[in-house]
Length: 119
Image (cartoon, rainbow, N blue to C red):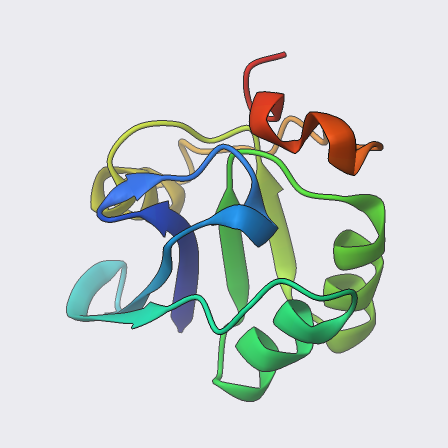
């Protein structure tokens, strides 16, 4: 399974679309077997969810995310986990152990994107 994390370096970003990079973790049998970081190619409506799904992401982990992105991920069959904080790899390992659950919080206003994940 491939898990993508919206990050600022190796730390989970507060808002999905405004992250610096995406860290992709390849997992197998409940363990991380590979890691690759890719710069955020740019935030524009509808692009990033499709970009990540096209790159094989089956799960996306972020601090906060807008409803439009959540809807596109749902349409593409990508599981969305929001409300996460801290180190990206630690969060992925917690997810694999069933210890990371989504808060379900959706950001509604881009004007407050810098505050997402701090609700």
